[in-house]
Length: 275
Length: 227
Image (cartoon, rainbow over all chains, first blue to last red; front, side, top):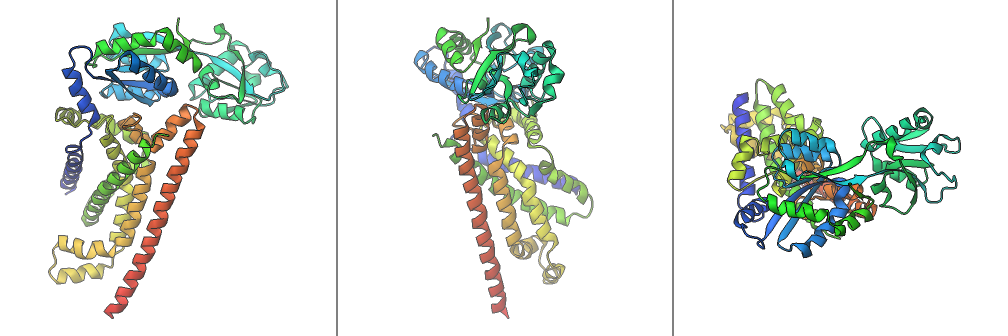
């Protein structure tokens, strides 16, 4: 009885699904796949699906706009999420041409499963860890070391247990030998945006965030970047997926990302081009 | 401001509500009739409510991804689910389902057993019994379940972003748009979407409450007429 019931139920579900998807005029990715098959020559419409880390949302929107004049036949379709969930989606066969990750870890995982077109993988961007204070701060901080001083009563950083930005922050503090002093007065944010909000509203005296977060607001001032030997490089890698049926078009777009035109856009949002 | 997430959210939530409405009521009816294994079936049907939505989304991704039999079949017939708005409908349907199922089941179980027995003595088949007695007598609860399901589907985020992705203009619902806006530090946009979704949810629930009150009065009055 139980079995019969679940079979009926699954059938119901499938029927409704098919009923819902079959006659619909918009099955975007299906049409995208069809057009890509037809487009042997250049100039015909092609669609690239790009899975990009959420921190790239604004800058990629501008890049997509700029790319329209470079290659008007190419439609860029971005899907945004955390790098970890994008990795999962790609592993499960989501139709993605290019992956722009916010960290090497996810890209490495995909490479190990031979899901990448290895030759296409590059380090595109660099992000920095920066010390910020509210724009009206009167403490006159000049460096990370001064976080340990008694003038700084509270500070904020991402929770090192779960937030990557917090792990980087902890790394910096550890290398400066002031981890205990600073963490005893630290508020741990559940993500780096929360840290930014606390500093913006002046609830804490200082905070540690990414340069890209700092670039989104004028309610804070950036004191300095973390000393380069105190923290691992934060790199955004980019690669084409092996499954992509339009790797040439994808490669052309990646080449475009490396141009000065894009570099200017990336820098506007606080990124540095990777060396 | 691009309003496409709003239309998409409404479309997805409405479709998801229709599907959960049908599936939830059927599931409740079948479970109530079960003699053995009720606990297990009930547990399975309630699972999406207990699991974190991201996990539900992951399961759905595994089921509908290209690596699975179903995913392969769907992409061969040209109806892929991953990264399409259909995926958003499926995710919302599954997540909202337990709310509909639970409310309907509660209503069915609280029905006066005498009503059903009376129906049986008149030779009603189980299906007629369901359509003519169980359903009409549970309408207020079922409508309440539908409202809950709609509200849940409208706010669905975790499973949706996993299965349907976050493609602006195609699969970006309001909840996902809020997430993206916050991630991008665009608080103005995030607040605007929050305001819109709060208003819609609130209006839905108020309208439903008004309807339930009206229905209850109508039932009382029709009973009086019968006497």
